Image (cartoon, rainbow, N blue to C red; front, side, top):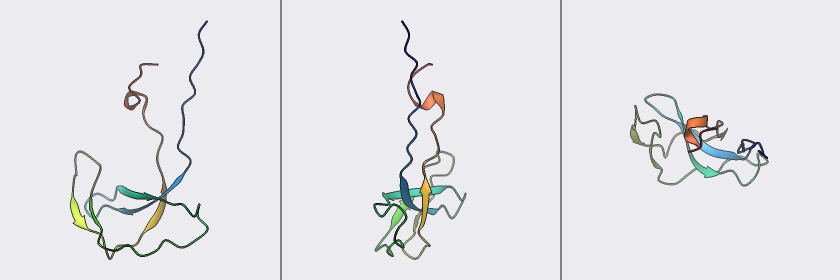
Length: 82
């Protein structure tokens, strides 16, 4: 008997900024307000872009903080061959 596995989608919201070099979202915190409150201005915020092709590192302390949802992972990123 084979039981199909459902893809788990992370529907939570995260706080993040966009990479200054490639515009990819850089997520740095879970939005615990679930979108009900404005994000607080961060203190010192040194972040690195998660894209392997970019990896740009910068100070985002003055950047606009936005809300993002994680995109679904590609099948090859799950570690399973379905």
